[in-house]
Every structure is written in C-alpha cells, then in structure tokens.
Image (tube, rainbow, N blue to C red):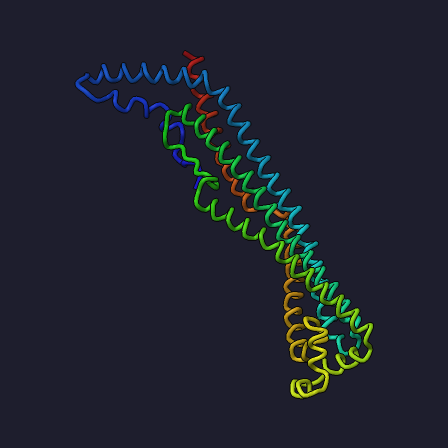
Length: 324
C-alpha cells in the first residue's frame, strides 16, 4: 500500500469543476467558464507550490531521519541480543558441566550450577528488556511517521484538489493491532520479576547445598555415589531420603537419567544460542536494517516521486505563463 499511482497532472485541476459542465449552458459558455476556473486554479497552484514543496521536502527528510533512527536502534539492540545470547550460551555450558561433573566434584557441580543459573537469568532479563525497548522505540517512530504522512497528504490534496492521493498509515496508533501489541509488550515485561525470583531461589538453593556438603563430608560422598546409581539401586540405597531432603533442588539430588535429560535439554539451548549469535552476526554484517525502517523509506520514496511529478508540472505551467 502507498501513494496512488495515478499521475497528479491528470487530475490536478479537474475535481473542483466536475459539476460546472452540467446544465443548459452552451458548449462555448461551458468552455469559457471552465477555462476561467482552470486559470484561477493554475495561478493558485503556481503561487502555493514553492512553499508547499519546501514543507513536503521537510517531511520527506524527517521520514528518512526516522528510518535511520530505527535502523540505529535495531543495530544496537542486535548487538545487545548477541551479548545476551553469548551469556546464555555460557550459562548452558556451565549447566551441562554442573550436571555431568556431579559424580566427580559435588561442590564444584553446585558452584557451576549456581553460576549458570545467574548467567541465564541475566541473559533472559537482558533479552526481554532489549525486545521491549526496541518495540516501544519503533512504535514511537512509527507514530511520528504517520503524523508526517497525514501532513503531507493534506499538503498534496490542497495542491491537487484531489482525493486520489492515498497514504495509508504504516501502523495506526489507535488500531486494535496496536492495542494487542501493547498488551504483548506488558505481558513480556511482567515475566522479568518471575525470572529473577526463580533464579535467585535456585542460586540460594545451590549455595545452601554447597554449605551442607562442605560441612558434612559423609553426606557429600553418599550423594556422589547415588548420582551414578541406577533407579532401582538409588531407591533401595540407605540414606537416599536423607540426600533428597538435604540437597533437594540440586544436581546431587537428581538421578542419573534426570541429569542426562537435563544436560541434553541444556545442549539444545546451547545450539540454539550459537545459531542466534551466528544469525545476528550475519545480520550485522549485512547492515542490520529493520523492516519498519524499510516501510518508512518506501513511503518517503513514493512521496519524492509524486513531488517530482508536481515539480515538473509546476515548471511546465510556469514556462507557459511566462511565454504568454
């Protein structure tokens, strides 16, 4: 959607006089009236166009500046997302190490898990915050762009006396879609406290367990033996309930199969984070252009074409007037 492709010069002085040729007038009278009215419109157009052209050119430049701002914001957010994904990748690796090293080093496993949880929370909070910031920033720029497009539409309609010039808003700030978008942003933002709470709880659990196994070497040795035991042996072993109660929520209270599944799940997220980092790197290399900016530039480009058509018409009419 964009500006009408109908040439401005085809309809610029016709809409106002469509009813003037009706009635009982003779062809000569109709022609004389039309020519007089058209001449008046031409004089008004020649007088108004230079100033209006300046205003439209300002609008076009503002639209280009907004597109540049959106691209710059998108580029910075892409870099921030790369940092968040890198942190998430490190979190996943630490989580895998914490799960796999539980039978070998109980304290080290707990420390790795606590660190991994903290990094994961930081990465998630950063990613959500970056997404919210970019969405809100883009919404503001789109709203400003819409206001400028409406202004340009008004200026062009004043010059052409035509309703065929059409600028459909890029995004209507009052539309239902905008309301749904705002709801989504707020819903996403509400997840940050939950992520932080769960992460802090997980870190505290691992720190508490670390202190327990450090103060109780026997419990530590028992927990390490149980981490490599099968389900049957683990359920029948003496002291299993004690370990599960004292170290609940940590790798030392997990069965071997549970740790393997946890490591596999963490591995999937590691692969996904690595893919995201590579994808964002390629996107940055290609210039990190945002679709919202491309939409605004398309509108600005169409405005330039229509303004060029009007400029050519202005020069033709001015040359004809000067010749007469």
